[in-house]
Length: 412
Image 1: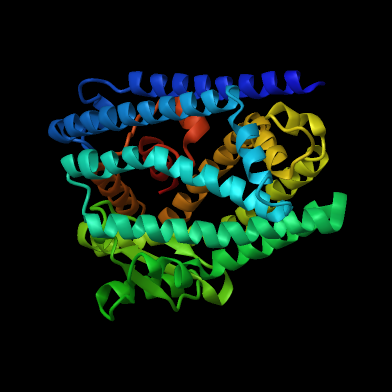
Image 2: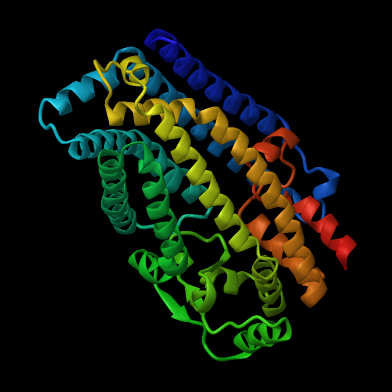
């Protein structure tokens, strides 16, 4: 296969991915009924359903515009030889493969961020504001952007630099060292993310002594779940949407409740939602998903190691010889179909695990409280409760609410 054929395949994959995504989004929008479906009566009322339809249509249009803009820029840059031009300019400045790659990827990341920023701003300060979700101030928004860019540059840059160094030092086996490093970093972040990264954006305080903490602790003791760390995060700083999550491993595990969740749900509903999260831990879903992620990363790095030194990849993007950074971009574009297939399989598995965690909560605490809590969370966020089956199959890591309710009712 020559460079022209590789370029054609890359462009074809790019167009195919864009087309499939737009078709799925169109199907999902068409699946929304203009009036409240009978299956949603008792969950949404007429007024809230009208808000949901309006919200989804506005966010859908914005996402469509952003995807079209990104596709046009990407396709134009690719066809105009932009990657080759950028690479040639960077190579003229330094002979270091590490610095070439860091500069190349850094410039592309900044450009991508600039392109997406107007859409993100409009979503936050126009659509989210219009529907009563946004609580983010301009100061917080700018601070989040700067902190996010700094963390991405620091952590992503160091990790990428290490991978390139392994590439130069270890030759064909560089992927093994890179895999080991990425695995260590992933495990470390899963254990300490809430302690190290979250405080840069939100405050977290231990849940105060009282009725709610006692009920959570009683449930944890009942199911043999050691829990010493229960925190409340100021999610209302940015949004009215409610949430809770479980993070960490072993003694570093903790449960984090958004303050909005505490405001919106009853204590029994909160305990039921946390019982679902504990169910993931008791069924070992957290560890299983981490292992699956590690295996996926290893497979991707191994495949990349087989192709990165193929000269046609670099030539397809305008290089005159093998360049790590051009091979990386070409591989990422060629890997898109594989990534989509893996994503669909992982989402099927994830939805199965969500049903199992719901069953655990229903059997060990209160299924009805879980149902009422999920209803409140979904309606408060104007979630789509009847997505198109194809869209749900590809993108949803959680089953739609109606499916979850029916399954919980069976397990009660």
